[in-house]
Image (cartoon, rainbow, N blue to C red; front, side, top):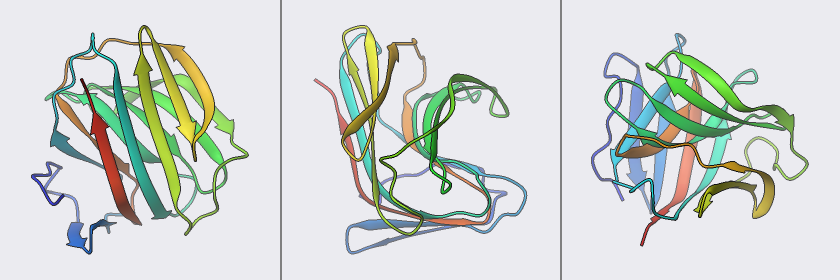
Length: 169
C-alpha cells in the first residue's frame, strides 16, 4: 500500500503507487537510498518478508529488502545485483557495513528488467534467504533493535515493487 515511507529527503526520490505497484525512482547520482516503513517485528518471533521486485540499476549496485532498521542506521539487508549476485549485509550507522554473506553468484536470479521474488524467513534461531522461491543461503539469526522494514534502492535506478509481504504471528 502507499503507506508512510521514510527516506533521506535530500535524495532525488520519486514514489508513485500505480495499480498496486510501488514505483521508486532514485535519480541521485550520489548514492543509494533506504526506503523504510514502520512494521514492528519482535526479534524473538518467526517472520517472513517477501517482495516481488523489478529493477533497472546501473553498474553492479545492489537492491533488495531491509529489516530491523532503527533511527541510527543499524539494519540488515538482502540484496541482488543485475550481474547475477546476492549479498547479505549488516549496516552500521547508515554508511558502514559488514558482510553476513559476501557477494555470491546466484543461478536463480532473473535478468535486469524481469521480476525477482526476494524472501527472508526467520524460523527459530535461523534466517533463510530465497531468490525466486529457491533457498540460496541460511545462517543463524542476528538480533536487531529497529522497527522499520523496506527497500535498498541504488543510485540512479528504477525499482518496481509489485507485492510486499510482512508476515508475523
